[in-house]
Length: 269
Image (cartoon, rainbow, N blue to C red):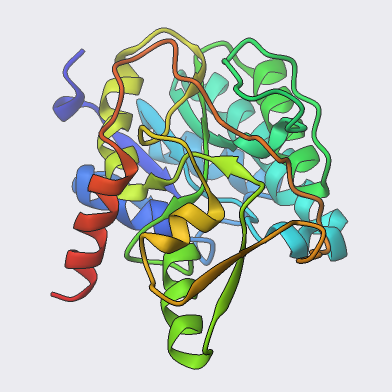
């Protein structure tokens, strides 16, 4: 099947990742959260059966990790039940599903995680995203669940923008140096989806290459950053110390430093 000739539906098209997916799939049918409430089962099934897509890419999610702790019910509806409804509709429409999950389905007790490792989330966000994975697997066979981490992109609030903002407002910016992962540029990820669609159904770990701490990541963005521990910088939601996703199923993407350079140049154009 040639990707260019198939009908693609992007759900969550106005978000940070969704916006870049729209650039990679310009002819796709695009639905924002105003067009489709993924927590409404009837609406989801009706919309997808009406559109009759060959591929559905779901980029809709509730991604505020600390916010999920306060809004547990909403998190489980959007990140858990919603993907299940989309999967149910895809199964009925005969469509493939590409869905994005997270490194936070793991507890951080291992240095690295491959696709077959057993998830064990330590916060509500991770729990809700894991439920979404399970609901998809229960409802259909032709899925690609893509676990991603530390996203940054031109079209949304992200760590890079937060650092740039704080750097201008504060003498020094404290960032934790004991949590490790892989930063991932949404445009690189969106381009990779074309390849993922053609691969076998299953779970994939897709990130930019290279491992760093949040402090190392921040140091590549701003000059006035100082390291601190997670103990010193308490957050509402507990974070895994290690959420390094290892991709064992596809070719690697470029190093995050290279991707960050493109991002920083792009935002200044």
